[in-house]
Image 1 (tube, rainbow, N blue to C red):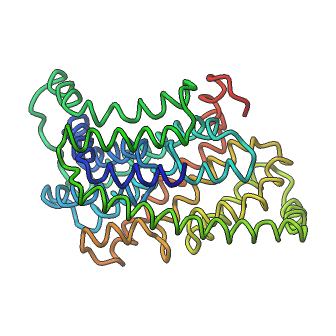
Image 2 (image 1 turned 135 degrees about the vertical axis):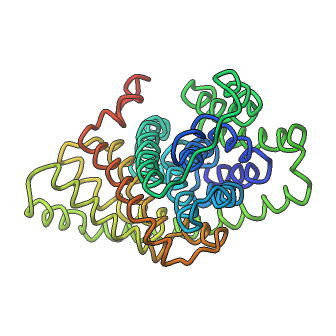
Length: 372
């Protein structure tokens, strides 16, 4: 599943799907202050339901969106940071590579995890749009006048129908029981190949070869990380460290919410230094017994853990999304770090709301009859 999700993302980033998605987002949000910034977040959310990878979203959309925002008067540092922050939604909205790995370790259903991640991912996008609106209004980032009314917006959606159909195909097939998450990733790859070559006519043999090479390298890296981190996690479990950690944390407070917030703050710090995949493998065996004993659903914990660790993509020194966006925007990296602070706050508020109101994550899988 991981390899095919990565291949699907690399193919889609070269197939013309990203530009169509951006046009749809701009059609919906163009007139409001910071309209292009809001459409950037919408585009990231749509592309997240295709690629499942944060850096892939930055690479695919950044080359289009960052120059477009700069052209409309946005600071280059803010434009790059906004794309990087929007791309953190990539591993939360299904399909999601970290959620697949969490499900294997925690013994939860991948489909349940995917269903639980949809609404929290949308909440993350909403919070980013809200903060972008406030920042844009303060700095005078104006929107773009629409070319028409509702009919024109619908025409833009119809024009991008091939790009917009893919999330429905993948997620609808998974939730409808038509195919497994692994098969869905393969379907996404085939769909990207067909539409990229025959519809958008951008997938040349050279582009396809480059996409396969990039996906192969990313898959190998993930497998090495997963192998080493899994071994380390097993050793920790054999030594009884999860039980020791649980005893230490419960001695601090007996409140389930306080325990969860302590874990979230811990993961926020580790996310600054360790990549998302390694964090999931290392700390799931440590913290899952604690949150289950506190009465939290393993599915809920997997979702908020993924949301939290995604913040590491825009918090240095790891901050992989920031590095990719900085390479595109050419803005000073220290400026991008400052611009990221309010966006990190917006995303952390989304995490806190999901913890306080678990139904945000659990409502959809329960409605689909899944055990959570």
